[in-house]
Length: 473
Ligand SMILES: CC(=O)N[C@H]1[C@@H](OP(=O)(O)OP(=O)(O)OC[C@H]2O[C@@H](n3ccc(=O)[nH]c3=O)[C@H](O)[C@@H]2O)O[C@H](CO)[C@@H](O)[C@@H]1O
Ligand SMILES: C=C(OP(=O)(O)O)C(=O)O
Image 1 (spheres, helix red, strand yellow):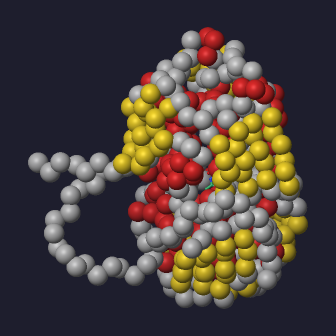
Image 2 (spheres, protein in one colour):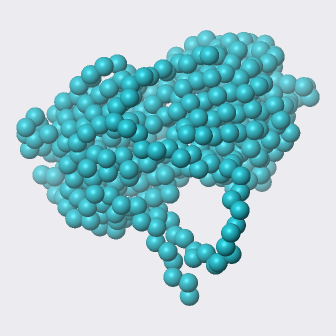
């Protein structure tokens, strides 16, 4: 067994984790009483809140998505532990099942056996909901010689083409065609892929992961350059290596992959979600509170740690995997100081923390510049933050955020989540706002945060999940 993140820390008791996978056998329908149409649930937060206590960080959504796709490369069963119970993972599990893989999910563990895959075409709604579903194109074409997949969904945060995936697969000997919103790929030689050289124009995380999986089963050596260095890429490489792949350079700009004719299933523990941890660190800062969290890997969050320290927070590491963030008035005085951010690929400031950091900046002193350089339309949260009283001026992908001494003053209001991280930035703003904040469309938040409401309640927040029932006409 190869466990690459083994933790025995058992902090405060975890909330129960029923994994209500869509894979569970259908429930027997006892009553045929007409169901009232259900609407998207909402969060109601009464602020301002002060947080205290300790929370457990869940496994990484993005690592889990990549590793679940990678199980399609492996003969036999793979066992993943610490998989977060979020809707993106359920969608991914449904995609694997649709392809013919056997997926069992229980209490944060998933066992996947893809030996029975008999279908290489995914034609289902789930593909259009999540980004990670598209990653299956690499394993399918590499192991089964063919794949037909819909263009992916995921957060609507700008132009998200798949040209690098397609050009990379072509460099490995696939014939690739994009028609009617579907990508069709097959091995040109009718058998499998061959090693090749490919330089990514941009270090795309998903393209790097997809090509790494494909190259692991290609015949010969593949050299990929200008690849993504994100921790999730490193996690995937470790899983593939444990499954028998030969991959050098994960975490650097170049990957050398010696293809193997077969990989076998292996066992691993999904690493903690650095974006969830970063979100809770920012929650402590925006509420001028002190909380601790574990497990986390601080080196994966060094950029945020530097920025929060610059703002005036005290960040202490207690053991290898526990961090405390303190922004209590006795330490910081009345306010935190604003700071500038420019998102960029790892190890730069993560784009997936930009909206949450922007919420914090509206409560700091001074004005701060936020430059979003990874996605071209990741500013939809600005309008909603403005409804909560934030003063922000946007020009393209740059935002000038005015702090509390320059006109921002958060107060409760009714707002709408338009994507995952934008949605959670409204939760953070709601924690700091005076009065009640109602956040609609929280299905976006449920895509990537496991039990966020229960975790916040545990820290002392007055937050409720309400499911309005639509009135039948
Ligand atoms: C499921 C998953 O892991 N999602 C993460 C992944 O998304 P994802 O893998 O989609 O993000 P990418 O790194 O691919 O995207 C970054 C940039 O590359 C561009 N691009 C990408 C592919 C391509 O073929 N051509 C191209 O031009 C995109 O338009 C974007 O501007 O990394 C992002 C960047 O850290 C994170 O925000 C997402 O949370
Ligand atoms: C953008 C994100 O996810 P996805 O790539 O799945 O849309 C995210 O996790 O913030």
